[in-house]
Image (cartoon, rainbow, N blue to C red; front, side, top):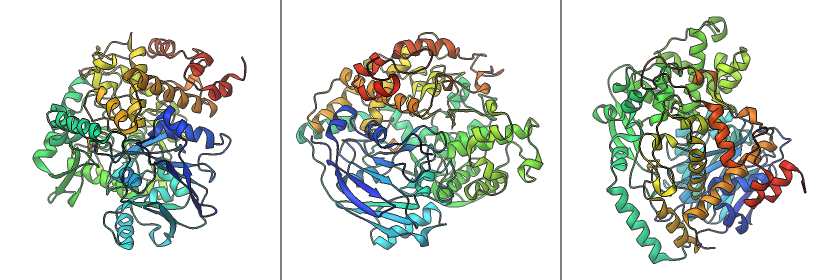
Length: 616
Ligand code: SF4
């Protein structure tokens, strides 16, 4: 099938063996690519009995059939493995140029198994690959690592995905950084890389991507570019970044602050994308093939935190390291984000876990005797600088924080207070203000992620009418179940394609582009069917790992009404929503498992057998 390079690179770090493997085209047909394809592969490859950081567990870098083509905002890749943070399925999507470069090098993805006896860098170039010694890179931060690898390979256009000290130390919040500060951020994929002694993956290619109908594809891509150039939201993202709507979100009460005990942040004006544009913004950046360019470059030359141009924070980072901790100094938040990027640590989970520690300290549940003498006060970036360093190096109190908020809560007997679902820290869209997010967080296959359904956009007016997902009242709970399920199915498709969520072109364009690239004949309905298949596959994957109905829940703090702001005291009725949701999904209300009939109707016979036994 056109659109695919037709092969994967299979690397065994234990033996040093590297070989090409033909892409399973049946899987590509059923699951498209990206995290859909990765989930199908990992279902085969994973031994559920092994711990997530066991060397035999695979780590996958996967692209989609449009990655690296001229289709705009299709330059992404995804990193997948069993998460050491949550213990379940994980997919960590990333922008930048690595995905496109991998395809130019001739591969749809990389499957990495085993553990190298010493630190190595995997170097992939135009259909060839080798393992290079990386002993001299061990201990270096992600910025130095990228620079040194490029220098050694003698080509500044080499793309380097690497870990920093956090990944080396197998910090459970460790991520993988590439293209300066782009991140495969969530779920501890950097720890998986570190556990394999894999410091970096460097990629360079010059090949062509086969497209079935070049002329039609070119014309469709041109039309999408024109649409995005005229799109108000795209303009906003370019001018003010992903923090473009912070004031509005605060007004609605959906801006988690003071560790989710406020939905409104008084200092929001000094953290917003508009404020950044007016003060410290010195440039923008874009991923491969992107005409939007939501990335920020910032420079600060005066004040407590000064730095030459660095990558500026996006919305989730501003919340994690700003509003959550009541830090309203944008320079400080930018610097904290930069530290996380250098250490190779997820800004969202790191900020949330530090926020949880602050909350416990302020509530008197922990004290200086637990924190190594540190006083945890809201609005104190200096202490956060110290904690981030401790976390990355697993030192002092930071060693506890480096395991995430669920384990921190368990350590002090207050797990129920940690704002996490299935072990993943909750993203920064409060379900008390945007009720659909209650279902999104409680049922997402990786824990409380917003990347598996950004229904908050729908609830503030960006409906998807052509997908049958209309605008709905953000404080209404009834009726959300079927809509969220449908939205998740669509996001499963876009995460398989893989396209940036900020590509605002009508959905039909994505189907048309896929068809023109591959020669398929998909409609929106057939794509939704594939999305549903992918969603249920990931659910089956997690049930095989021990997930139960009881894991579909929200943390206690998110079920307490907020006294101020736009939530109007609303608390989502999660039980009602889950009932509707299970019914819409045809999932068993007692166990949460997809019904046998549902799995069979989606062509998931193997999963039906695994979950329900043969012939029942
Ligand atoms: S909109 Fe932002 S995240 Fe999306 S592709 Fe463009 S630069 Fe990357």
